[in-house]
Image 1: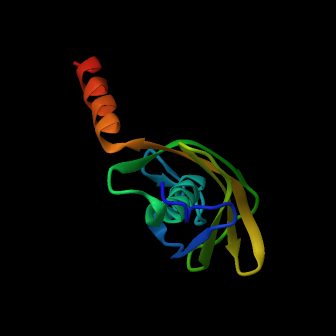
Image 2: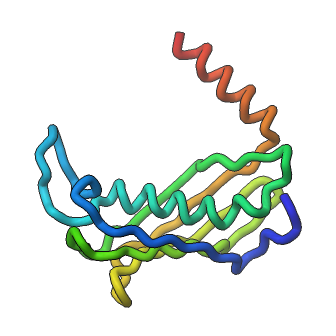
Length: 134
């Protein structure tokens, strides 16, 4: 990793809550609000944006953990802002705190962890996983 990755680095994204982000089970929409799985996806993306500019050419990051407290509903049509901040940086690990806002209201918070590996090592792990599934 480049030395520019430091505790305190941040990244964010915004997302307009759409119908395809609503919780649905067996094809039935349960609530017309921002789903927890959509929030998890956006938190992963925001945390990735913290890491990506600081990877060396031979490195890649892979998510290894996410935890979320979904605190309040956000209706379809509202814009959610997701903010990720690096809170721990290790030789092979980045931990981000992630928060989701509907305006000024905190609607979700959690932690996301990425491991940083050489691309060759990661590809080897993926190939080995493919062989196990046969």
